[in-house]
Length: 179
Image 1 (cartoon, helix red, strand yellow):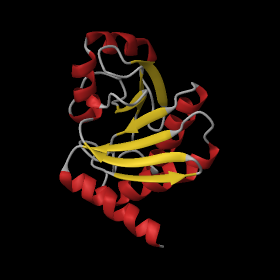
Image 2 (cartoon, one colour; image 1 turned 120 degrees about the vertical axis):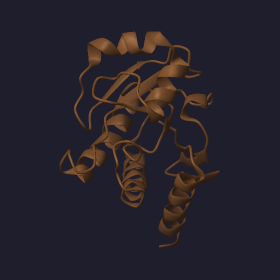
Image 3 (cartoon, helix red, strand yellow; image 1 turned 30 degrees about the vertical axis):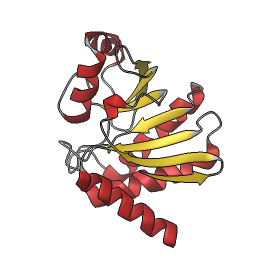
């Protein structure tokens, strides 16, 4: 685990399962456009939350790349799930701006809703094919850029499932802190 204080807000990287973050008010679902159960993060969140989550999502779908919507967390140990649709690499253009928009819109929505802590997965890096190195820099740079603008959010965590993903985020954050 790596933890930094930026403008009185805690920013943390941790290795783990996004659906098991009991210390977070909200978790972020790397959603599909229809907000349904899928593979990866969407599958883990929907399986842990139970069928009520998919039912609540029906009236919110479809969403476009970069958009974020909020629901209850159902059987998850959190209060909310913020669903964000990241870009599919090579299909949704411009990918970098859509990924930035995903992180910004999610943090803006969390702040607007008075959420004090939020956990993100690595958005678009699984089945959506976004290259990890590019996705890491966009995620970290966008989150750090947004932190001074946040009023309600006091803790932002990026939860990474695999060792490789965790190491990629850790290396980029260490490099950023040294420059």
